[in-house]
Length: 442
Figure 1: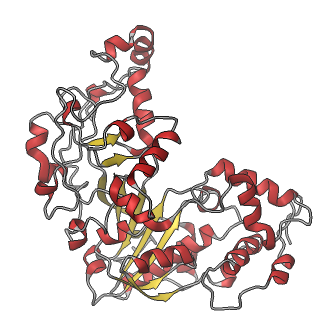
Figure 2: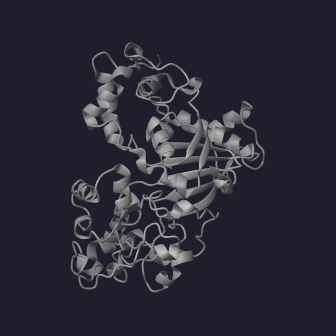
Figure 3: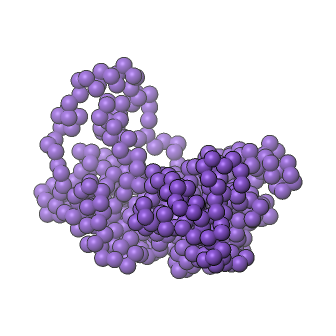
């Protein structure tokens, strides 16, 4: 984006007073389209084709030059599409703005791998989403609005916990993976969701019609084309994406002669960012970062995949309501009632449904994980059932567990989470109790 595309506060204020819907959008309101409608000629898209050219670009834009060529439902940008609409509405962004992709190319080459052309291996992301300029420049030159859904960059990350590990001699500065001042060198990948509707339905064992109807109904009818356009098989949902942090050489991820340490982590703002001690999320995340760095220093590679699935994909509001119920229930916050309180509020104890999670691993070319830093049975089963071998499962060290998190972890172990210790009995779960709000310490 150039400086000409950015409005000043005064310009935004003026635009708010002067701009009407008719000025922003030249055509009438189009609520939906139909397969045989005049002017509707989608660019061919063949999910699972051998090459990017044979597959075709994903086009979801409603801009004038692209509207009739759209071959996907939804909007680009994941959950941020709503903020883009707001920026257009207040005059901060032109409705027909096109990004300037010069110098935005990936810093590292990843793939392609055979999984990219396997329609059953990848159904929730566009494997070519990082390379639209490389493969679809002809469409871009013709005025078709195509947006990347994957970006690859490099970064240094600085964490106080890593500084502490270095000071204790638990991690050393090698000048490569860990710099002299304790910064971790990483390659980062950001990915937005792109769903192949038939593939997603198949992954969950439901019909495509059922999936389309549920997505339409339970988003307030946000996307009518889920119903009216059965010919469009790709959907860009307004949900959070994921980030991959790679420690070491990304080429080693797909190399079976190199060891791979990995954690798949689901977002927990309260713990990951603010250090809440009611769960093990941040301690487990930090531990996995340390282990990934060590693996890279030993000649292998480490990967942390961070999914935006706050509160087991139930959301943070639901999470906090559950916290309140747990602390106020008769008998206090016990491991025996951990999942029950969630089910009372949300109706289900977990909505992460890990069936789509392995797609990013297949995109990275993973065939074996030597050390899987996770206790989750759902993640383990999803990965193994997708054809990826897991050699060793690694629990969080007990000394890293906050005292108040034992309610969560003991309940999860009893529910099937991996452990090298004993599985607690029902009676034992009754005796695992979290602190009250007014307690400073146990």
